[in-house]
Structures are given as C-alpha cells and as structure tokens.
Length: 314
Image (tube, rainbow, N blue to C red; front, side, top):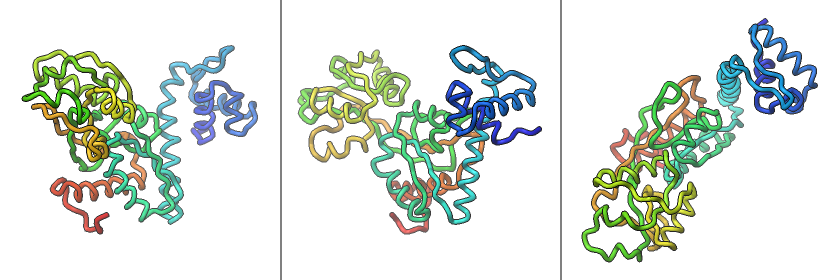
C-alpha cells in the first residue's frame, strides 16, 4: 500500500472536525468508508493516529507528528493543480496574501492591478494583520505569502526574492493636542499621556517600548489596547491619545488636518518590509508573479530600491 490522497483527506477531515461522523459528512462519504480509510492508514504506518474518546477523536503523538506533513501534502497538491491550470491558460485559482495595513494603502493594490492584468481569471484574497498573526496564518496555510516588517526568518519561514523596501513609523497625535504647544518636546514629555497601541509582541508595540528605552525610560502603561486601525486613529483624533503608527496608515487624516506626526527627536524610525513564504514546499506561480509585480511597484515608488522593471509603470 502507498499513501494516497484519500488517506490524507480522511485523516485531515477527522483532525479538523473531531469525529469520524462529521469528517464523513464534510467529505460527502459514509462513516464506514472513512473509518475503513483511517484503519488502512493506521495499519500501513503501524501506529494509532487517534485516541477514541467519548467526546470525539484526539490525536496521538504519532498523529500530531503526521499532521503538519499531511497539511503540506494537501496544500502542495492544491497548488500544483492550480499552477497547471495557470500554465494551460485556465487560471481561475486563488492567491492568498497576508499583509500589514500600511502595505494595503498603495503598494499592494498597484501590484495586484498588474497581476490581474496578466492573469484576469485569478482571484486574490487579502488578509490584513500585524506580524505575529501573519506568521500564524502563513504556517497554518491560510495565506501563501506574507508582507510584513518584523517577520523573523526561521526553519519554517524565509524571505522570498530580493524585494525590500521601507517607510517610516512615527509618533502620531491630534493636530490640536496640547503637547504641540510645548517647545522642544522630548520623549520624557510623552510618558504621562494616554497611549493606544496594538497588544504586546507585535511590531508597533515593540517600537513603542524601544522608543522609551532608547531615552533611558521605562515605557508607560497603555490606556487602550486594540488591533483596530480605525479605533487607533479615532482615539488619537477624538480622545487625545498618542500612538506609534506607520505613515501610510494615517495619510488621509494627515491630509484632512485631523492627526499627524508629533515633532519630537527620536520619534520617527525607518522600517524595512519584506515578502515571506513557508520555507518548505514551493511558491505558487501566482505568488511568484505577485512578487515580481511588487518589485516593479517598489522600484517605481522608491527609485533605487531595485532596478526598475521594463514594464509600463502602473
């Protein structure tokens, strides 16, 4: 016997649904058929993959070892089918992209425009998140590539291509914030005012902490913790909060005159972006094409980042 697609499908369905019955329903098969397929797989491997409990099926240590590999097999099989359809000119597949919010303001939309011009049948799904959530989504096969700032390379995640570009993150306040009346602001002046930030272990939060530690200060308590960009900007404009934000995210409000950078030495830092992929497996063809479009867009927006593409500027 060899490991077949039906074994992988049955195994993952049981993992995802917690019982043979629900797995069978999701696969539109009978329960005995799924039980038989699982039994074949366990016999082939010579180990039990699940513990049968009254509450459902729980993975054994053998099953936990098998799960990430079977997810890789299933994902790579799906990608291979989509790539073949692309090569045949039948591309109606889906490219799943994860990105931090500032990339969504101008860089990614322009790259997607170029991608869909060459692959009009393709569907692009976008997930917005901060770096920690993008890593989770990438490793869980919820996205094909992640565009972020603080994504660490590891034995599971790697930088793809030579694409790197930067913007700046800065301290942001309402245009009528009382601190703007003070001459020669310092970081110390920002310690006792309310802050709104994403939760710990995110890139913006780490930048906030480093801002004060670079000034020899312990960071203040954060008044409001949220991942919502809308909430952050509203609290800055309406409630007198400060935040560390990338400049593209508040560009419309800055143009409208409601919020903007707070002029304080050390309050603005560059940050470098990259495109990341799972280290194991191959990059789907649409993802490769999107990376090429991103390189083109970045070379156009930030000349000198890379040689400009020969394609017509978007």
